[in-house]
Structure formats: C-alpha cells, structure tokens
Image 1 (cartoon, rainbow, N blue to C red):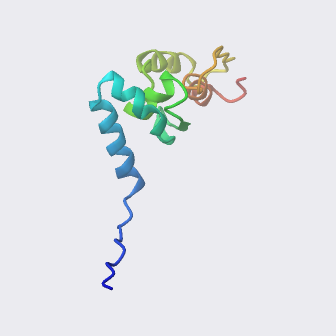
Image 2 (cartoon, rainbow, N blue to C red):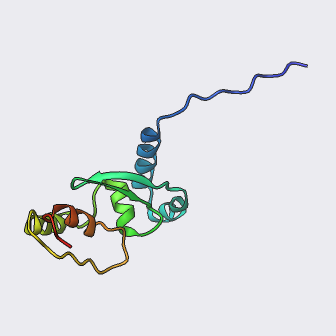
Length: 114
C-alpha cells in the first residue's frame, strides 16, 4: 500500500491572515459580507495613541475600526481630543459601544481628570 504523506503547511503570520480577511470583506457585496461576519476575528488595533481590542462581529463601530484602523467618526474624535488635551476634564461618554471616544479622550485629558 502506497500511502501519501500528510501535507504540511507553513504557518501564516496572523497579520497577513487578518489583512487578507479585511481585503476579502472590503471586496464583498452586502449579502456576502453578512455571511462573512461570523468568521471575522477580533483584533488589537492602534489609533489615536491607544491600542484597542475590537470585535468586528459586535457592532458597526468595532467593525469599522477593525476594517479601516480607526473609528468612522475620526474627525469628531480628533476635534474633541484637541478640546480636552492636557486639561482637567470630566469625560462622560454615554453609549453602549467599545469606548472609541471615551478611551482616547481619557488619555488626552490632563492629570486628575475624571
């Protein structure tokens, strides 16, 4: 009996796999995106001086951060960050999201802010 050896696979860097998934998701039409959604892996993304763990299956903002590397409201976030930067500020973010506004604003606010 001639047995074929089991195929071996070289490991692929996680970042390459993630970029391939992002590219496939961007290229997909809406129905295909809906099907791909369940397979999208969470990732750590860096933007606005912070590292954030996002799960693209959770909500729109997480998905956009996962897909493009920043929240969809980046202009608003930048403007708000400039307002509180280095100042003693009380940051209150009301919402049920991933902290895309609260975390960068808290980091930008001055020492003793709450």
